[in-house]
Image 1 (spheres, rainbow, N blue to C red):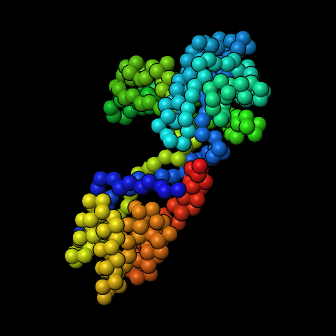
Image 2 (tube, rainbow, N blue to C red; image 1 turned 90 degrees about the horizontal axis):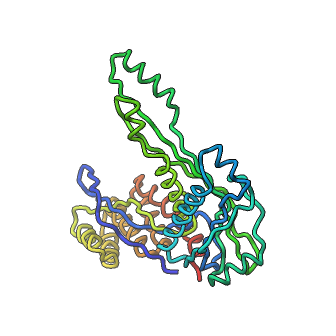
Image 3 (cartoon, rainbow, N blue to C red; image 1 turned 135 degrees about the vertical axis):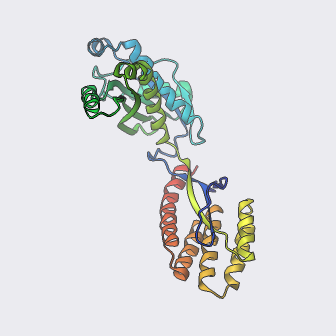
Length: 344
């Protein structure tokens, strides 16, 4: 597998006494938190969390209706759908209908779907697996409003501004199963929880509450966010990471840095290797070796990157080189997992 690694725009200058280093960001692909059988390449999404008649009691007690439950759980499915469609790992299809939950409780798994049913859905949509939202529940509350009122009174008594802070918190709880009919196995089953908070400040508590996000808007947002966050855990994604490069005063180090800034990393690597071989002082060899390690990382040769950053630490003894060595060691471990997830 050839991993794509892209250098980002130079973002920050890191000044030392001689201004010898420069910061930059690189994009690093990290393995997904949830490993899915690599034979699964196409997935159908199904909302199986719609409360049936037994679920009406909960709706009465929480002021939620089956219609609202369906809308919010579909918003969760939408979050999964839209995120997974941005990934090359899976092709996604979505069931054009939903199913009643197999258990009246909205925060627990019911019985599993029978395999004939799973197989039928996968054949209909021509997919390898079925990802099912088995239960879904949301809640919204204003966090400790009584304490807010007490703090407001105390501020006034102390002669301070009577400004109050109102915090709203939305919570979503979901349960997911991933059915793989080819082997009749449940590849994944677990609960998932997400919280979101919103804050408003005002000298008037009533005004602060009025400005706070509306309950329904908060529930819609946390529902989508829950699906999106879960989908993030299913696919390898790219993340920005900070790196450092020595720019130096000598011509070779400067030229190599300029080559790197213009994304000529092979040219930069060659230049820094020449600097390393020709430098009589360990300090300059250590800096060149550090940059050589960076070039190898960008060129996706993590083993050589690790070798050269170790050389940099031995030659110069700088803590930056030791920290970078630990980063590369973790990346090498992650790469093994990533290759297994992405191997066709």
